[in-house]
Length: 399
Image 1 (cartoon, rainbow, N blue to C red):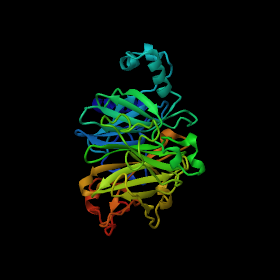
Image 2: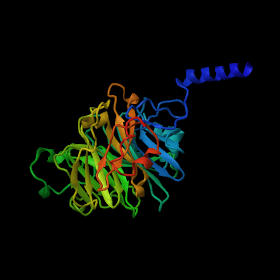
Image 3: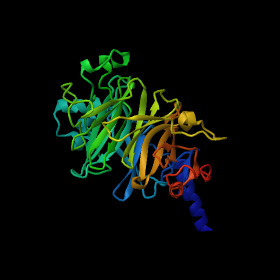
Image 4: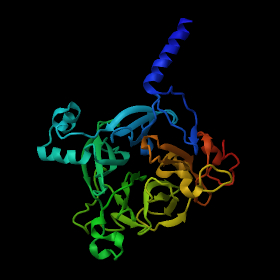
């Protein structure tokens, strides 16, 4: 009786502090997208994020939408249950904190006043910090975060970079800047190619190829085009600088894709020697139709393959609206054998911290086309049953 009473007291205290008691998970909600709790019982804050395996754990990085713009990091052994590892990179609310707060003094204490001013300009709390992506450099041992770094009016349209010695941080902000653009003579006269839109870097992602070469994929030119640029060997900057304009060559150091298509939210992966790029349209928080492209080379010709989402009878969310999600990442489970998970955000514009996560298995046909289906309540064993063949869909809905 005493043990039961004690247990009830402990549960009561936990609920009063955290709101919900965490229950161990062994499946993904998929299309239904219930609130996903971490192991402390709090809703996971990793929006616009990315998941990958580094070492013996899975790591999920994403945006915090619960009171600040810090970058959040979670770890997992099984992809279902996530431990909050704290803030990977913190924003700063006042310039004085860079001189007085021990956390920030440890990171920036050796910088000059002007350099600290630049840090404050990049990561102060009223800045936009979105779509953080993490990459590990095995050669240097460093961990690097790239993110969309912007002003509150989205006028800066820049890429931010931060670096750390450990995956959990703390990450030290390095810089924010615009990225590649074409020389003036290579542009046409379309309005979205006006000079002040060139070099924009908004929704972004990272991709590391089999040879270790890393790329940043980003929406540019007022979201009217997509760029892919090669990173340097440290993954901390472009391989060939954006200035002077013309030093970096289109098709060699970067590629400008889909002019006028108005695409964002890029998610890239590689399977069987081919590159895949899923994107969304640019309609703010409102869902729209996904499209994907395929290529044999990153700086080669990309073929428009259309909408990967398949409409089926009686599904709760429209396929032509990407099941009411926006792409954020493709999670490689076993890329050599074609096992991938689509990660999408179901944005709640009225309450962004309550935006949900939709994870779906990626189907790959024998001829290499991909598709997404309205799958709910599924686990990793499902990836074994589809075997990259679209003909076997009898267990797709409500496994």
